[in-house]
Structure formats: structure tokens, C-alpha cells
Image (cartoon, rainbow, N blue to C red; front, side):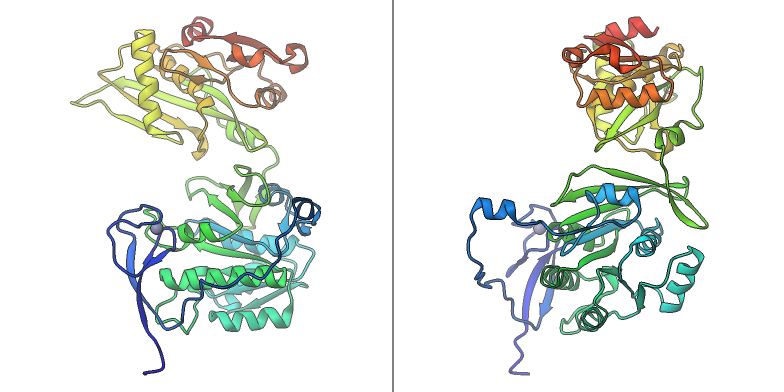
Length: 450
Ligand SMILES: [Zn+2]
């Protein structure tokens, strides 16, 4: 054993950096409790010398960034920023069972190119059966159950696909490493080698990675730093739709989303998500309002529901689904201080219908109005949409790309939009096809609504 140098190091499961000594806090990403011991028999080759010449800015700008391969699925292409980019490494993350493998097979099916699907999760037969059930076109699809990285790279060499899918990164291993598949050191090593392979061979590689609810599995978080594009698939058994979201994209815009309907035949694209999210909307019930959200370039109308009731015991409950909890607290404080609504002894529940999640302060106005509507038991007119950020002084602040939001609302038959006055300076109201009421303060909004 003398000629094999075994090294002990401590690897951070969040960012993937390693250190010679253990620390409670990762020196790189400052996460606590993420370092764990790992042993490697391979020498680190971090000090690889890059012999590439430096290039002028014009050179770089004039270089073709690579060919985009359309997947044939519009929702996927948009989220990717126009299709799969040759030579890029893509992570497709999500909870187990959310439909990542199904989506990957659909991509293989619609793609007009050769694809190699590595499934160490299921046997080749199981994948083939699933592919048959999903009606996957088979001429250009190759399957393998290999789970050893060198074996996978051999298949890649032999088949020369345009797209390689690894399902999942948690089951792939480099047998030279002295650790189990799915461990931080395996995931980092395999991720790194797949990245190099993508660049060298100019092949698009998509890795599937499972995330658990508590985020304990190291893989995806660490891989996010490594890969070019991070896509997350959201949704659960309570709903039959799935949302594909881009969290990172070196070659395109982020925050684009794609929406799919899930049934026994797999995933199908949802062309008009607003209609889907509003399909079961409650009408003439106090506490609901409609918010025109904008995810990437895509406007989607969502129903915001609030329920305010007297707290039965002790501390009042505040509960929110799909929106920042702390921001809810702030909005309740604005209601109490600026609008004089006593909220101190009230339970407040807020829910975005359909399991939708929004990370945009433009949602504030719709939330605060829904809460007030429920508290006062006065319904909001069903043809109204509300959009605006609410500040601590009770002022309504401008939002981005209001025109996109309003045209979606107009298309779906809404007749009035209540929007921040600051947004309307440069907008031609006539072209909008929807009545616009501008407001400066939350109190102006309440005057219009109640
Ligand atoms: Zn770290």
C-alpha cells in the first residue's frame, strides 16, 4: 500500500470546497456543520495549468457560443434560454418522484438527435417500459444501466450522442474513490469529470439530482456551483401540474418557468397557465384577489387567498404558502399602523392557489388587499387585478414590466387594474385594453375596493 497515497480531507456538502482541517463553519461558503471527512486515493490536480491564450474582447464576442439544440418542447426550450447548448452541463433537480426522469425521457423523445440515457436508478427494462408508456420515440434513444463513470464515458465514446442524460448523479460513482455513490466526494468528482467531458466533447449533458425536503443530500446544492444551468422541477402529488424553473443559467435568462400537466401519459405542456390557475377560482368570497405575476418573461395570473379570524388561544397564528413569511408580517404591520385595522388578536392565513410560489414584492398589494377584504368581510370585485410593492409608509411602489402583466389580464377578461402611479408615467393607457386606476398609497386602493 506504500505507493498509494491516501489523503484525508474535509469536504463541504454545500459548496464542495475541501479543507485539510475540520471546521464548524465552512471557510468558503460560511455554512455551518457542512464539513465531513472524506478519503481520496487520487491526487488533487487543482493546479492544472491552463495553456489557452488570452483573447481579445472582440474575439470572444465574435465566437459562436455554440449550437442550440431545440428539444422540441417549448416549455423546456424557453426555460433553457432557447434550447440545449452543446458543451453545457445542466442540472435537473427536484424532489424524488416529482417527474424528473419523465421529463428527461420526453426530452429524448422530442429531440431530433441521438440521446444516451444512463439510468442507474432503474434497470434498462424498467426505463424501456416507462418510455413505452410515455410513447417515447425510440429510433435515436440509447439506454444503459451503467453506474461506473468510466463505463459511462465508454458508452459516450461509442454512441456519440448529442445529449447524455445521467439519472441520477446520486447513483453514479468513480470506483477509484473510496466512498459510496451519492457521497459528497463522489458527487463532486463525477460532476467535475462530466463537466470536463461536456466541454471537451461538445456534448450537452443533463444530470438528474434528487433533493430531499430538508436538503440533507449533498448533491444538488454542491453541483449548482459547478454546472452551467440549474433547473428545478417543483410540484407535488396534491396538484397535477409541475413547474420547471431556471435558477441559474450561464447562457440565458434565469427565472423563466415552464408549466406542465402531469397524468398517466406523462407530462404535457400547459399553453395557458393563467386559465389553469384560475380554473377553480372563488368568486364573491371575501379574502381573495387576483395578482398578475411575471415569471421571467411570462405573465401568469394567480389567485391570492387570505383568511383572517379571531385567534382562539394565545399567540395569533400567521401562516403563508407561496410567499415570504417575514414579508407577510411586515404587511400585517402596515395594515395595523397605516390603515388602523386591528390585527393583534387575529389569525392570518395566506395562500397562493395551486401551490404557486412567488418571490416578487409586486405581490404585496394583492396580499394586503386580500387580508383586508377578509378582515372586513367585503369581497373584492372579481374583474379587478392588483399589483404593486407596499412600503413601510403604506405607499405603493412601482413594479417591473407592468405592460406584460396588464396585457395578460386584459386577454383573460379582467376590466380593471389597480397599479402604482409611478409605473404609469410612460405608459399609454389607451393601448392596454384594460381600465387602469393608479394609486399612491394603500389607503387609495382600499377606497377603490371597499
Ligand atoms: Zn462550503
